[in-house]
View 1 (cartoon, one colour):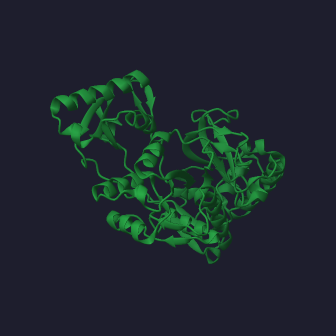
View 2 (tube, helix red, strand yellow):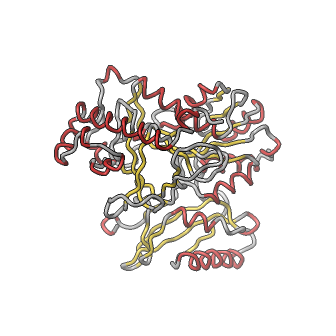
View 3 (tube, helix red, strand yellow):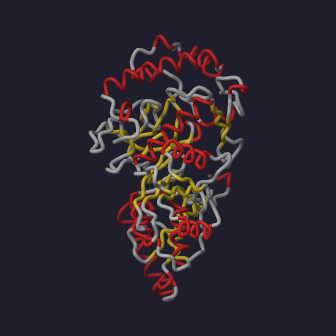
Length: 435
């Protein structure tokens, strides 16, 4: 039984009528209150009244990350600051951070969406949930905390970091649910093994992971190393944080909370809508948010949407796991390469650990991809000849599956920095003027 079956199992036609009503309402709301959108709508000749179907969303302007930075900090906020009860922000790796203001109602919506996510993962009142997402401006920690509150389970707000303490708390408190990034879950599993702690002997049974792209192979690796069921949470700071989409027990795509978010797929080059089931860039329009509702926000995530009947009974549209990001895509020898593709192929190789880094370098006029991956201890210590053999095996596997030549460097254990949050997978070493 879903957390909120009235919406999660609503007949599709009824759900789409609800979406259309909320879309028109949101377009009118931002046109009245946000000069940025009012100007855009006027330029494109659209009004709330001109939206008569969900397909008409394609008439609306797109919003992208640069628009949020250009209007930093509150230029896209639709309510006066006296009505804002909280502000989150992205880490802002380049330029100004992305701010996310919330009204009290927005926080209630966020809690609802996250409760659905955790409930679908099997979290119940009797669980002890260890929240190892970072608390603070990042939306992860407080987002998961808020979603757990309506369920009524015990929350242990460890935040990220202090890995040995995380493991001690798991043992001493009887943690049953772990929430963190998938890369940090691997870091915890690795440290537990070093401490001779068998996570399979603990009460831990499920993990809810997100905040970074991860492959099905990575999920299987986490499950194999920890003995838990790995579930997914998907979201963005720009849309309010985690809770935009989630997987259920069937794990056949992520259910989008459609009563809160209208999803579209467009061709990343032409930006034109593509038919349902085709791969492209994911766009979202917030349907009920009040402080900062995004209109057709470009996520840069590449995926596809499916309107499949799900064994869980939910009728929400599904998105496939994110295949890659348009801004993470590398072009090597004329081939589009996503880090997730490399990750999946590396995890086929039994001689390596799931710790890797992609270095992009310049070789003459061409871009060169160097893959650094940690070898298992016994492999690395077997000597240079064995390492050379494994490097060749990896290189051939990637060449055979993707058609590109790469240089592989097998490095020793712990040579690649461990993540307590989002993992840094791509390092661009090209001179800035040649990128």
